[in-house]
Structures are given as C-alpha cells and as structure tokens.
Length: 378
Ligand code: NAD
Image (tube, rainbow, N blue to C red):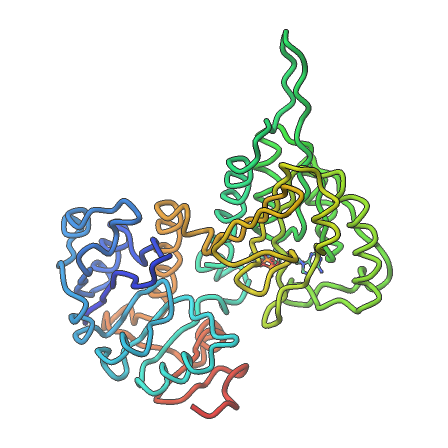
C-alpha cells in the first residue's frame, strides 16, 4: 500500500506532513512512500533527504496511487479529483464554516480524518496537532512582536541610562498563551495574562507572570469537560472589558490567542482600547483567522492605527516557523497512522469503534459522518 505526501498548494503553507524520520518509520510499518517533489523545501527538507530515507520522488498526480494521503491542509476540490476513492486522508480539515470543502471530501469518497478533533486524552497526546502547532505559534507570536516593537524587551541598565522592561499582556492562556508567556519572560519582559478558565491562574503564576481576570461565579464554571473555554455571557464580557481597558492602556505588547471551539473568536480588545495604547505598541492577534480578538485586525496584514499602534494579523503563524512545525506535525501524523495499521497484515485497517477514529473521522463511504457536521447534506 502507498502513502503519498503532497506539496501543499496554499501560498501561505510552508509546512509538510512528513519528515525524513517519519518516512523511515512509515516504510517500516509496511508502506511504500511517495513524496511529491519540492514538498519539503519551505520546511528546509530537500527532496534528496526524503529519497535517502527510502521514499520515491513523485508528481502531484501520483496521489492517484495512494491508499493514504498525509497532508497539512484539507485538499481542495481540484486536488481531490485525482484521489482514489476510499483513500484515507489525514490533515487539519478546518471544517467549521467550510461546508462545501467538507462536502467535497465526501463526494470524492475519501475516508478523511480531521486531526484537530483528536481527543485530549493521554493516549492521543502524541497526536495532538493543536498543541504541537499552537506551542510554536505562541513562541513565534512573541518573536514577531519583538520584531515589530522598536524598543527593547528586557530592562537594560547602562552607563547611558536605563531602558525599562516592556510590559507584555497575554490574553487567552491555552497552549499558545503559555508558550507566549514563557518566551516573553525569557526575553525579560514584565508579563501579565488573562483567561476565563480558573485552572489557568496557577499555570500563569508558575511561569512568573501575573494573572488578571474577573473571578466571579461564571468564571469558576467556564471550563468544559474537554478542557476548553465556554462562550461567556454578555455580562461577563462587559466586566472583562472594563478590567482589560484599564490594563491595556499601560501595556507595550498584547498577544491574543483566545478561541472557542466551533465558534467565532471572542472580541477582547476594542478600538478604544487600541487607541489608548501609546505609539509604537504592538498587538498580535493569533485568532485573526477565526474572526479575531482585536478590533481592526486584518488577516494577513499589519495595520498601523492613527495613534501609531501596530495590529499584526499574520496568517498561519505556526507555518512562519515551518521547519520546526513540520517536524512535530509529521510526528503527530505518524503516531495516528500507526493506530490505523493492522500489526499482523501490515495493511490499513480503520477500526471505526476506536475512540480516536470516532472523534476524528469526518467523511467515510461518500458521506459526512462526523456528528458535528453529519446533518448537513453533502
Ligand atoms: P484554545 O486554543 O481553544 O483557546 C485558547 C485559550 O483562550 C484557552 O485557554 C481559552 O480558555 C481562552 N479563552 C477563550 N475565551 C476567552 C475569553 N473570553 N477571554 C480570555 N480567554 C479566553 O485552547 P487550547 O490551547 O487548545 O487549550 C485548551 C485546554 O486544553 C488547556 O487547558 C490546555 O492546557 C489543555 N490541553 C490538554 C491536553 C491534554 O490533556 N492532552 C493537551 C493540550 C491542551
């Protein structure tokens, strides 16, 4: 059976779904591997490294031979035309708000898996693409902020005077936010952070940052059983905004990462708050592709406001550090693929009763089967 790794066609996607290391391991599972020419270039993996690992070099059209396709992004309708019916396709499917893209997967007859739905249980930690990618995005957000900020981050006491430390505020402390706190601290910034989930408070403090939040009764129940945030009430949001407004005016850098699964990102920073910041301040909106946490943020752009504040809305921030992101992503996919292979026959054997399969299976046998999307006609 053949595993194919295509070159991603999205202009903003530098990641690739395999590394030379994972290619070796996929071959040892019993597969032949074909990697499309140039697939790894933007992640600094030359074609020769894949062939040295045992892969054949191929063209995009070779996907027609594949029983398994490992991808970063959901294949487009045009890409799907060459896919074999019944092929397993494993990628970040980004299905919310993309009904047509999901329907196209069903129509192509592929067995598709949405890696972002991997349950957050111990067994699946190694397959958790949201964590592996968000961690790097959180790091990169601070690097991007430092590059746009034209003052120093650490306090510097010099003979010529003292440069004060930058004040950095992290809004939303999941995986990305935690890494942003750690990175900003390493660069010497004074860091504060906020979230609606109470469990976060201790984590923030253990990283040496100060936790700021409206800690009322609603806050005490804001975490779902799955560990994600709930959408907060209008009343809570108003209290949160009042607290934030006062704090943000004193910050140099604000990094927002707040997401709610399946919902638009919560708006946390208003235009008035942006206007209250001093010239040269920087906001990085990691949620910009999901509607944005910051008023005025534009996907794919750096907007400079009238008062000289930069609002950075880079797309695919994990992809901005593609070489590292690909290594981890490739490992996540390999670990999941291993669970789909019968150890004895060395063939693909998708167990539809396995909880990992149940959680991630998006389309199967020509239908959209995931419970969050299944009622929509293909
Ligand atoms: P996410 O990307 O869904 O959201 C980012 C953060 O934004 C979350 O912390 C969320 O609480 C916060 N947020 C949402 N609405 C907000 C608002 N109005 N104001 C402020 N903050 C808001 O989250 P994530 O990074 O995927 O992490 C979710 C949780 O899952 C975390 O507790 C994380 O530690 C946990 N996790 C567990 C595992 C595991 O057990 N295997 C793996 C990874 C993450």
